[in-house]
Image (cartoon, rainbow, N blue to C red):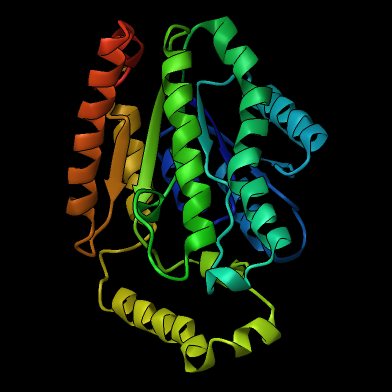
Length: 289
């Protein structure tokens, strides 16, 4: 059984994944930004199920270092790190302030970097580990009104491509999980623009994001298989696979978009291997199928 740290454990993917792992007999610790307030009930439920919860803000280096150290101590080690903490953003791209855009990147990209810097010394020293990352289908393509969020997930995918190769020689395997849109509280916490003067310049089109969001909600209501539990199932399936033979990317989607993203990923995987082979470093890809 594995010792697993999940960042953003109280979120839409974190909670069902933690509960599924605990039910399988894994030892789980997880981070939340605050244990009180809106997270209090979820934290209590997770703790009752056996999870160890630490308060950790991934936008703060000292908090992240302390939180990861506390989680490792509670687990008695670390086998699997699931970089799951994240924040969404939605709205017409021009209206998004640079400050709001920077905040999204601080959580979704630099936040992951802070967690990795805190956890990797132990994983490298033990010469074995598994790191999972929550990305998105729109970390592969971009759709209207999700520009900032997509950009942050594209950036995440890029740094994970590098972590994959740079850590393989230390026995650390990397896996990206790419869910489609899911009906979770994630949508309630979206960063949205607040620039009424610029918005006025878009005229009637300024109503398009709200109309699109309504359509998405209706689609999710009509697609019962598209639920966050599918992500938990994907994590369990990955951890059941032999070490070093896990896929680098796993698409989790029941809306019909997934097969196209898989096709895109397959082409990129071939291109990546061809490029690295031309430089004589294709062995850096050996820890994934």
